[in-house]
Length: 123
Image 1 (cartoon, rainbow, N blue to C red):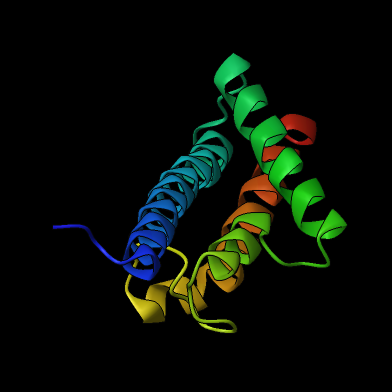
Image 2: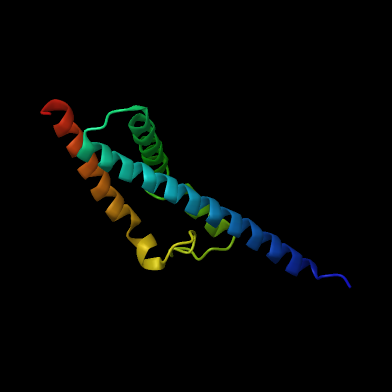
């Protein structure tokens, strides 16, 4: 028995979409860890190479977003392979969490950087 070509094509697209969503979710958790480490470093006055890596990772993510008109490049790629456009179906997170990621991330990053600045310059 041979599968119809359109089903094989659809299956391949779903596999690609699954991998993109999985990778996007992995990147989300990595970036979240970086944000929380920046905040932790600000609270505990910790200045080390891990902090430097976390700041650089967030900076690179920010550049990628700016160059892509404040849209994650992986979201666009996921839509190309079947995720719904304009929704948060490009990542394995609850919709309410995915919709608010940028808002929460900006607050965490700002708080962490302000605390780092205070700890570095004032003590």
